[in-house]
Image (tube, rainbow, N blue to C red):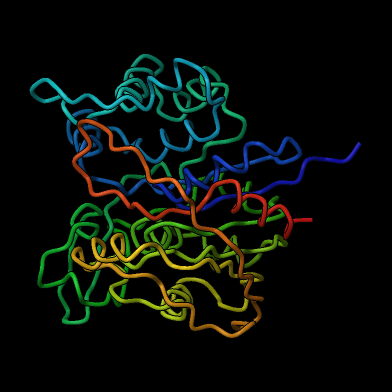
Length: 332
C-alpha cells in the first residue's frame, strides 16, 4: 500500500485557509500547516496581553479549513461576535481555544485536542511557541514593531518598501514543525501577505535552514494582488526578489502564477483606491532554478462580508480547488 504523500503549507491567514480548503479533499495527502504566530491585532492582542497566550487566529483558520464542511462546531468556530462591549469582533473559535488552553494548562495540547473535536484532517503546527513581535525596517530607516502596524501602515510608510524583517526577541522553530519540514514531499510557501504571513515564518530561526536542507519540492504561490505597506505596486519579480533575501532562490522548484484575465474594471478601481494593484507577470519560463507554472487560479466568488469583522478583506482570491489541483499535479 502506497504511503500518503506529505505536503507542508507554510504561511497564515486567508491565503493558507484557501490552500488548505482545497487540499483536504485529497485523501492521499498527509497535510501539515505551519502557521505564523506573530499576529497581534484585534482579538489576538487581547489573547496576548490579557490571557498571556500566543495568537490563535491563524491556527483557528487552519483548523476550520481542514475540518468537515457541514458541522455546527465548524460554523461556530467561524462565528464572529458583532454585539457587546469588549467582545464585538472576537471569534468563538479564538475564545474556545483560549478556554481549552486554560483548562488543560497547555496551548499546544489545546490545539491538538481542539483539532480532534473539529475532525481536522491534518496537523496544525505553530512555527514556534516562543512569544515574539515582528519588526519591519523601511527604505527611509523607519522601524515599525508589531504585525498589526505593518499590516495596516501609516500613509507615510504605505508606499515604501520593506528592506528588512526580523523578530524581537529571536525565536526558534518548534521541533514538530521542523520534523514536518524534514519529512515533507512538498513544501508550499504562500499565498498570503508577503511579509506578515510568509516571511514572518522564514525569519524564525531554523526555518530557512530546514527548508533548504529538505528533499521536498518547494513551491511558491504568487499573490494575485499587491498590498500597501508590504508590496506596493509589486510585480512578480519583486515578490521573488524579496523572498530571495530570506530563502535561497535556487531552492525553489516551481512558481505558480495565475494566468487568467484580470478582474473587472470596477473591482480594480476599488483596489486602486486602497493603493493595491494586480500583480503583473513579468517572469520568463524560469526564475533561477524554478520553473514558472501558469494556470487559471483566481476564484470567481466574492467572499461573504461577516458582521463584526472590521478588517479590510481581499475580494480577489485564489480558487481553492484549482490551486490544490495544480499542486497535486506537481506533487505527482
